[in-house]
Image: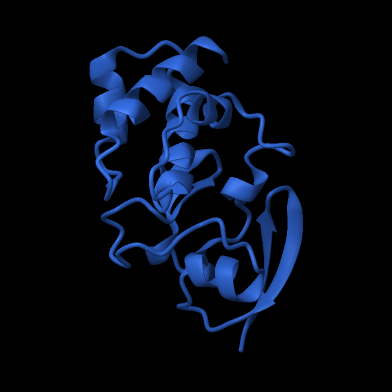
Length: 152
């Protein structure tokens, strides 16, 4: 199997996997970074969202062989102590119900807010539109993104 060195959460990590292995499975199975979740496997639900060079990206369809010279950030690396403004807003507004989609929601929101620090309600809805929440916590998610934007 080929060897790859990936920069994940600021550290170089070596893995030996098939070239077509999705990043999601490298994170979960090879590196024990299990905060990134499997949802649908076809990049439609958002549960597997990570940042690649700061851009929210679905990791279930991202082959490890194309990830040379990029910086990958998972939910574990978003902040050292869980105090990122998006994480704080999620806690303050008690957003999660089952919690399964929340890492992907938080990663999408944090990448969006890095680009748009003062979004309108419509911009928040549009940015978060592709992330599915099985519990339908969409109103709380939108409120948390708005709150986080004020605390950046």
